[in-house]
Image (cartoon, rainbow, N blue to C red; front, top):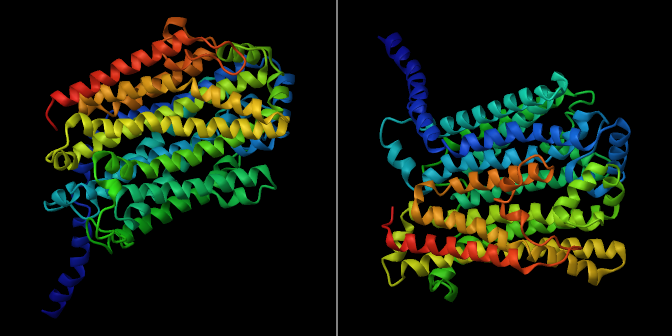
Length: 544
């Protein structure tokens, strides 16, 4: 009798343990269904774009001597090394994928957003508690999110490896780059899982995870620009040290795997020690009386948007400072190839390479500013999906006024971040060149003329949200397609009519080229029409 009771007591933990994971397959299917657009987009982007770098580099640099000069110019520029990492070889694969170094951080952003969206956001909206009231186990949600994200990273790594090999690159180096990129995504997925357990809300969880990612990028950048010691503290530095196509170091996968395993295990342990909807860090109590700035929808939108605006502004400031520091040596680097001079002339519209490089860099920053704008519009979508908008609109707030309060930040936010970046480029470059006033004006002017193109993307996102709110995340896909067309079109690889569909190719090519008002007015008109359509459609339709 005692033996039977003891046996039952031993068996109970195993039963409870298996029950904690019950329903994982069902939740995985649900998450795949919800991410049927976003997940394939970022998997394809990370799988395909590195191979496009190889194809473009082959078309630009014809001889090994040009590649050698290009690598030498990179090494002589600490700003470029800090931005992208060092060059370890003059082989075509190593040179081509040098500028793909930031992909190790970009895939981390994708996995962080994916994990937090399916863990902490689910708890914040109450869906996790509703699902957990059924036969779904405690760990099922986290397990399903981790499995989906891991599968996306592995597929992206495999696709990247196959396409790099298809571009006549050695299989070993191709596998090294694909493995490092997938390992980076897995490691930061674990970090995001821990952040989701520590915080009490999705916004704080993203802040914790992105703060860790920013610190890792800073350590990697400072270390690579210096003696290299600090880069070994950063997981992003480990990915760079894989050295694809340059005597690969396969052992760096071990610390990346260790981070992924340790953080994932820590996330499960932390999850077991808290209640659904709570966090391990207590939330700071708010003031007993709301501030006057929260008296209307604009104040509420500012409260919701200010954290992301500050984070994006800091990122643009740092990137602008790095670009401004690199301009001093960019002339020698770009002068090594006639093809790249022709490419920048098509994009920049001037024979002065530094001015063309500023134009191209600001155009890429404009794409990033459009990403911020989309995220601001998606905040409006999130407020409606979580039914918080319904509570706000139950008062004396009109739907148009409520929508405009958030859309205003989607329009003004890009102004702030682009002006910050343009000022940083102009100040740093002007201080090095000795003509601060002129270079500052060049940077601010180049940033200002890109704003109408950014607002067109904002208008597209608002129109999608107003007409078909469930497809609002498709705006990310539209921006991704624009980025691919813009990049390939600058290499003269696509028909002009297709390139003309991208708004970022139409603003005046400042600094250096003549200013033309017509394209600016056309872009402003298109943006105004799209914004009007989206706002009126939102006004006429019911809330979801």
